[in-house]
Length: 512
Image (cartoon, rainbow, N blue to C red; front, side):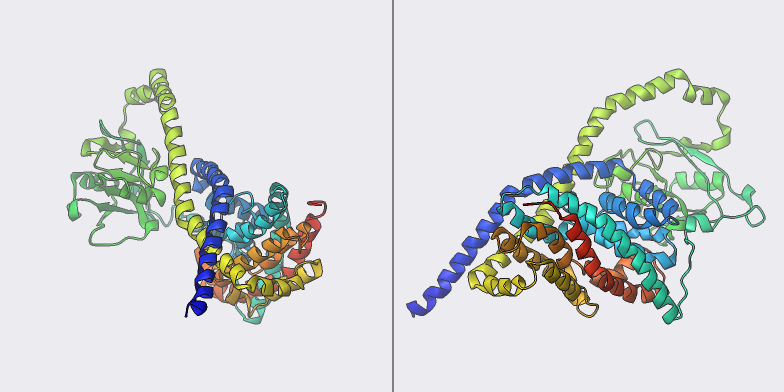
C-alpha cells in the first residue's frame, strides 16, 4: 500500500514545491517592475481626459493611417482592453470590423512595454519573455520590437479586414454605411424645427461649503430633461427653481428612467462619493444639494465644469441677469489672482492624491488579475513539468518552433477560422503554448531570435471569441455584426503568416 501511495505523494509534493518556486520567481522578478509601470501609466491615464481620445477618434475616422494605427494604439494605451474597442463607435459602419481587428491586436502587441493594457492575458508575453530572462538577455529589445512590429502588422490587418468586410457585405447583401453615425453631430436642429425661445440658460454656483462650478446650462430640443434622484423621490425646491427658469421637463429618477442622451442636468443629494461621479462620468452636468467634494472611486470625473455641490435655490440664477459689477468682480485681477493662488496651493495635494489613486488602481490589478494568473500558470506549468507532459509537448513543438517555417505553419493552424474561436477563450492556449515555448527558449532548444515571431505565432487568434461583443462595444448595428464576425475571422487567417513574417524581419540582430 505504501509502495503504491508513495509515488502519488511524491508527485503532489513535487508539484506544489515546483509551482511555488515558479510563483516566487515571477513575483520577485516581475511584480515590482510591473507595479511601477502600472502606477506611471495609470497616473497618465488620469491626467488625460477620455473625452480627448473620443474627439481624436471622431476626427480621425476618415484617415487610414490614423484610423488603423495611431487611434487604436493610443486607445489601447490610455483606455486599455476592452475599453479601447469603444472608440470604434466613431467609425463608419463599414470600418468598425477593421477597427476592431487592429485594436484587439494592439491590446496584445503593446503589452511588453505597457502591461496595464491587457493584464488578464499578460502571460502570452510573460511566458516567452521568461525564456529570454533565463538566457540572461535583456527584455527591452524584445518589448520594443514587439511594439514596432505590431504597429505595422496591425495596420495591415485593418486594411485586409476592409477588403474582407466589403466581400462579405456584397455576398450577404448587407450594405454598410460609409459615414460615421455620431449622435452629437447628426441631430443638429435648424431654427425652423427648434423653438429656441422655449429654452432659457441658467447659471449655477456652489454654496459656501461647496465645490465646483459655476455651471452654465441650457436645455434644448434633444436634451430637455432634468433628472432628480433625491430624498427617496421628494422633489426639492432646487428642481422647481430650475424648471421655472429653464422651461425643462423634470423627471423623478426613483420612479422613471430617462435615456442619457436626453438629460441636460442631474440633481442629486449624495453625501457619499460614488454616486457623485456617475453622471459626470457620462458627461452630464450634476448638481449636488449636499457639500460633497471631489473624492471617491470616480473622483477623476468630478470636475468643476461638470459638477457643483452645496447648491440651494439661491445659487441658481438666469445666466443673463448678472450685473456688470458681478462680471467685473469675477473677471477682475484680484479674483483671478485668488483663483491662481488657490490652484497653486492645491496642486501638491492634487498631485499626491493622483499618485495615490493610481497606486490603488495598480495594486487592484496586481492582486485581482496578475497574482491569480501567476498562481494558475505556475501550477499548470509545474503540472506539465512534473508529469513529463512538457517533454511530450516539447517534442511536438520542436518540429515547428525552432524554424521560421514552423512558426508560420503554427500561426496558420491557430488562426484557422473553425479552430480560432475554440482556441481563443481567455487566450489560455496561447498562454500555455507561450510558456512552453519560453521554456524551450530558456533551455536552448529554440533560438532566442525566434522569440518575437513566436509571440505573433501563438497569438494570431487574438480576441476571435470576442468579436460580437467587441463590435457591440463599438455600437455596431446588427447587420455590421453579421458581416463583421466572418470578416474578422477570415482576415485573421489571411494575415497570420504575414504577421509572423513581419515579426521575423523585425527580429534580425535582436539577440545573438
